Image (cartoon, rainbow, N blue to C red):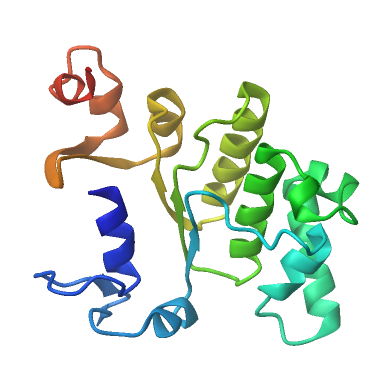
Length: 195
């Protein structure tokens, strides 16, 4: 269900019924590049950074900033969000750790100046300290009023970050609710989360 959701938002899946609306405009049927131009950015599962480009080159490659001054300012904002990337700014992406690559993938998406950021498996397989850094960065972005859709299995940080949650099982929406409801041990949602 999660992959289909992401693919549908970006216009990569046909034959889906219903409407996807962004700022009152139906985006079903638009090309992926048109959806991206409307301010929707994706941090894909598997990171997909350019391995033979440096950290800075990866960031500049996806920048929507029109001048070098604005691009440089955008890069600096990413380095403020993820100081670890500034330390590695001249390193090739394929030499970064998995967590650093994930930070870079988030940074690349942010260089498009999005209004809506989608993260697919934001922290899967990462070391706990890196996971905490990424969740802290997402909290900061939320506090700056960026709309974020996070697909992840980490319940505790999701409850702290999210306002509304949806549980999809076998392609079907089985539960929808607020963080307080999801966090309660007796919540109906917990029945869908148990293995």
